Image (tube, rainbow, N blue to C red; front, top):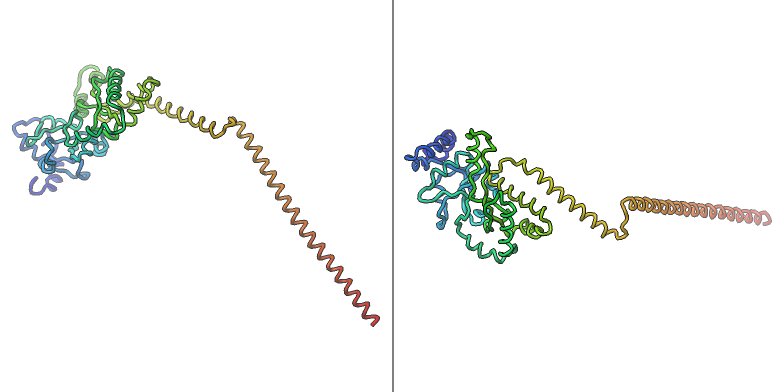
Length: 353
């Protein structure tokens, strides 16, 4: 059915029994290969809900692609927005998207398919065709110099020594400042917590130190590098937030609420800086340096003067209209008198004649 009518197989069989097939991959090593041909997944190049087999994926690989790449996240949207996808988008490589916790175990147990390694997109040093070209072009792009990047990575690792075991630059990132690599699977970590029965529970599973890869061309990294000497406290807060962002993207941040106090501090810094710039801008546009109360008082008097001038103008206009009307009345009255005098003269002439 899977070969003859894949659509019917997916809708009627796989959606119902797919979990048991994946469980077979993890438990029945003798039949791993035939079972793996029955697995279907969404990918970064399929539509939502559209699934393909591993054979379909291999047939769509470019000739120079040696491995099968996959990424585990909670949803498709999270996958497509993940910083781990940036390198694959740049090199036009298809990535299998997996959303269930068991999928990580499936990929780890399967290991290879048709001679190709199953590689997590979260791994470091992924060998992507076109990667060398990006490395060659990196030097000509704006960003930290090699010396600055080396010093920044050293400072980053020393500052977060209790959380970071290594730090280096990377060319795989574009719109993201940093990622953690070679980390334990977020899904597997959550699964282990569920089965952890030791005293302490969640607190018993301490997150190990992480390897961080930084984007030396990202504006955030460039900005932090420029202020780390002048504002060491602020710079430390910022790289702590970057590190937590990396853990969040990798799905291994145990409790996001731990970031809230730091985020509030960052927001306060931004707002304070914005207000300071606003005050400076007001001073520049108002060289007299008037206070808010003075501005309000001066504005009030200015409005009063304007109103008085307007009233005077209206009064003057009324007086002009009145004067005009009076002149018209006077002219009319005078004309009437003259007309009557002329008529009287004609009457007198008529009597004598």
